[in-house]
View 1 (cartoon, helix red, strand yellow):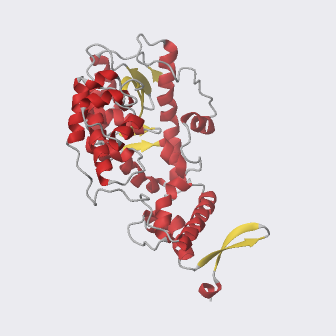
View 2: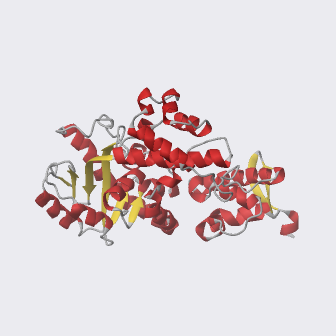
View 3: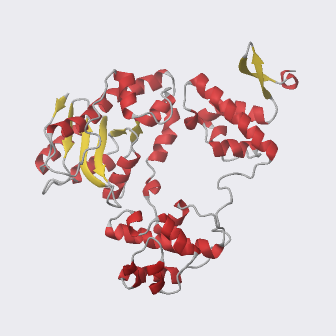
Length: 392
């Protein structure tokens, strides 16, 4: 595979993209920093086909990245391959408003091939290629220039190995007849709505024990205010106001801006500065949550009875058995909330009751819940058995 020098000019990038577009897939990775910013700061982008690989410097003066973005988000003929690509996809979405499509995530594929849940890139490469990766440059400051050869070699290595293992993983999936199992997962990953986060929903990420509509209304208002401030200043949310301080403000709201100087976590300057005034304006405009907006006491739980909770535990045991038998990560087969819903009596809208999940797990899960399947032991080993009534 040909490895190119760091690309810093538009003509070289355009020529590279034209060649890459002739291939059925490209492997993609990014290096970024976000410790001191709200938005991830893209510092390097690596891309490879089976023939060549290159690192691209998005910080280079005058570099036009548009041909690259067109390849990633507008070219439907080229499959984009990532490993654990959630943050990479977020960066592309921030830059273009779109998500790469079609795409393939090797971490998700590894779950269907017996590598366990959320296998790391280094572990996957070592398992499939026998290579131990150099992690020395992993925590480098990618924003500093110039980048040295070790940094660039480390970064390009991620996509060269990715381009090597991808065809092998596809072949394994075909051999096991599991390729179509992943279609739904990949489409979900490519859903742009996953990366569109409106400020008015920011409060849902915060944990607050109160269910008082007025308190939660203030939380909604202040969380949205903080989100707007953080985005506008490109600072982490905690640099605006920490979560604990936000909880104090909504639980014991100050009556005047002058009171902000006595809130733990805020400096005396908040008594008179503009950001303090904007905080108070958001607080005064807060409205109590409506009954429809109030969160469930136990989100996503269907209200299990004690018996249903025991059945849910049995379903989780069955899931472990099926995951071990099939070599598929349990997380890919079923979620805990689906098992609880099935135990509580739900039969509609569950992924485990359709498609490959039904064949591999859902049918037996339904039989277990409805009394047609039971656990038994034989020679000290746990196994599933059909009930006598059902067998008759």
